[in-house]
Image (cartoon, rainbow, N blue to C red; front, side, top):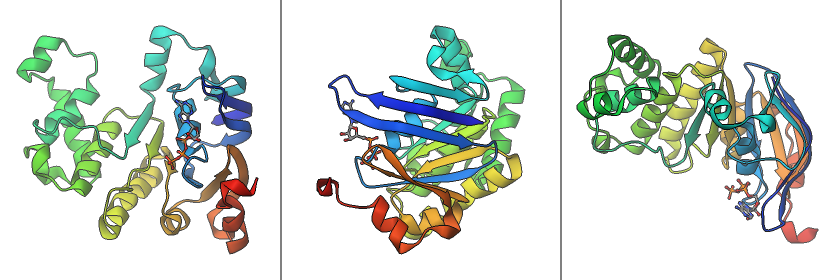
Length: 248
Ligand SMILES: Nc1ncnc2c1ncn2[C@@H]1O[C@H](COP(=O)(O)OP(=O)(O)OP(=O)(O)O)[C@@H](O)[C@H]1O
């Protein structure tokens, strides 16, 4: 369970990006986080894997107090949380398989990494992950020969190969066309349902959020203004979430 209790996040310049956040997200939930640009969506998910520190309140993930972690504890903790970005973050001149394997054996020595010598079980795990996102046939293709949608699926496979409990995705389909975006969202949904991984997605496409997520969290100016079933999101709720910032 991911639990926020009265969490506040203030950036070093004094800007308060999150205020009084209270949330409980159970293992296996599929949650979409929506809100205007600058509302605090990225900040919220980046606090969960300690890319950002919080200033007030408590944030726990499966009982671990995230802000109390130090050094190696943070690195070990992050192994349980996959992070997907809009920009894929792949090594484009390497093959798909190598990109996925590098992630599944993060402690591999530098010379094995350089020579591309990976343990056999890492290869099996990587191939399984590629199969899970439907691009097993691309395993030996160089990443720069793939479309954006295929690259995002490689990024998802790379995350899956680490067997995380939680997947955080920051605008994962923002740069994809509508058809490809749905294919990638289907992958997230399948992984969520079949592997019981929690999925938290920041997303600008409200239609996709409502179609795929079970639960929607609406953020406006750093505060949660809606937290409930996707099926209960009305136009009134959307107006509240997407109210213009200057309205105060
Ligand atoms: N390092 C920083 N220092 C100061 N303010 C920041 C910093 N990073 C983000 N902010 C501010 O915090 C607020 C929330 O930013 P955040 O990136 O979480 O928004 P978002 O909802 O994810 O937006 P977008 O949809 O555009 O990605 C914004 O007003 C932003 O300008």
